[in-house]
Length: 279
Image (cartoon, rainbow, N blue to C red; front, side, top):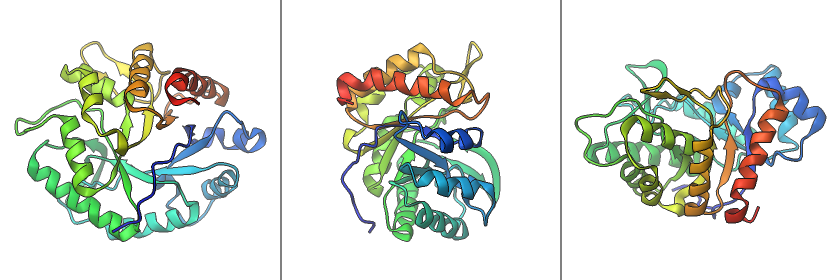
């Protein structure tokens, strides 16, 4: 079994993006408490990304976030991938690592998308077993993240919040609770986001994501290419009130603005959470 550590609070961080490498190195902005990196961007043999990663890591704590573990797939676990992930963990020494509660491919074909799972007891058992194998191999707990979703399955036998709770408790892993994803899915599937927040175990929620999205009118799509909207900020305040201090970061993956604009959003998150976090 992996080693267990007490839930830490890192403060307020950003997703590390190549557009901001040089500015981060030159300015070392104090408003940023930590960075999250996309694991797969650095699972390489060399080059500028690793150079900047090592330099920035000297000044900031980091966590690692994966997009292709495919923990929900029926394919065997990819231990070549996990070996590369372990090498990066040894290099970065992150506070934790995470991936999505989803599948990304089948028959060894990566579809480069985060695909939702049926919320069934069989899925809980299957995924919890695979998470346990990953944690045993890497020697540490992982975090699993809730998706933005656009479909549901007729086989669903529980809510999404019951599902992620059951998986985390059976696998003894923790949760990356994406507040924007809750908002997006609640709009798309017409559920009460507060019921979601009340349904997850606060002690297992170690990290939050905040991001922007695209609203097409009938459907919201999680795009990470727009500023965070007021209803998501309002939901984040309710999340902070419900769950207490949780390390919070902002994702921006398209239409990357100047670093100062993302820091402004980060400071907004800090101000919203202050009454509940004491930060």
